[in-house]
Image (cartoon, rainbow, N blue to C red; front, side):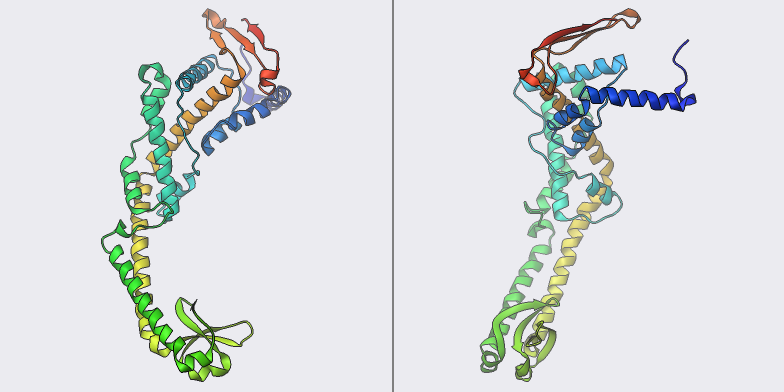
Length: 344
């Protein structure tokens, strides 16, 4: 008779799982997971390593070893798939798919992730027939060069929206700067006037309630007519927008708001583009993370074993497992290597 239907025996399932977890603990398998995770680059592949569990399916085990062997081929050629770590962008992509507005920094991080996908795809592809399994994974990574180009042409290295991101943005920003300088000059005239010299607490221009103001002594309030936008904690100073600069201040604020709307429009268009391609971006992240996970296994295993583990398949599930010059993963080269053969 075969194995009993475990779903009919919940206690048996619990006991089996407990024994498996206890066995893995005694074998230091959780520590091995952490060691493997330290060789990953992406957050998704790190989670794959930390949640890794032994397989008991022969075909799956053979597949895993073939993947790792191909990754070793890449390492032996002096290459790697992921050259640097990037922030996990899954949350940003998910928000964009729900019509959320992304910041310039978030869009830049998505572009960097897409660039890593391109590097991984290109690197594996360059090995051709020598890495057929990894090549098949890499081939499925979507080409997202166009959205990456759009982000790169609109977002700067610090996540700022560039002047040339839209036809009217550069002109608006020039106008904002021009009017701001006029406003500064007008406030400077007030500061340096006889009433200003006598009435000012400090000869500086401040920003209060999104308006440019000067600091007037409270008991000299009547000397500089204007709009009060706040007071100091002690009440000894009032932040006043002189009446002579209100119109210019209004013009500056209107331009600032218009520039902000134009900037948000650029971010909105790019966010919508990311949202439309969210499935493709997520697919690329998963596949790239899988490649990174496989490469991590190769890096970790190469440090531990002089020779790869071999599995020889025979008929009737009679398989031979050979560990040649194997060492405990946590002991590394300080341990005496041993050969182990496990027959059917």
